[in-house]
Image (cartoon, rainbow, N blue to C red; front, top):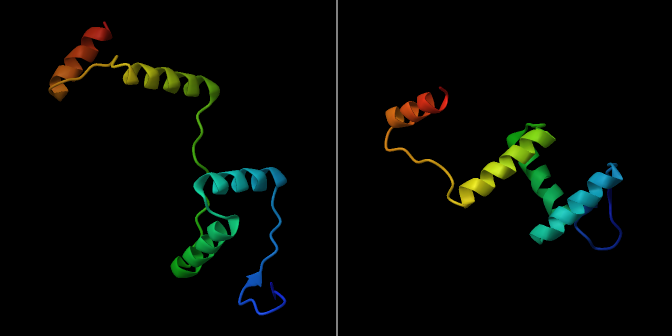
Length: 99
């Protein structure tokens, strides 16, 4: 880390990352109307406040599951679903369907 030239009160951090990841991050930030610097500064502030790091990778469904989820969402949006007044009625329906 080093100070920038001039009268700036900011420091520069050089970060090595996968070019494709950078491209996706820039696109996402632009979509949200913020800069990568804003994202990284937020994360640095959170890191120093919480004094912890969490590495999580969101779960991404496989192709088959993604297709099933998309089909299910389409049906639900079209109103093609069952609604039950109680748990027992839902269980009765399932028992009948599984016969």
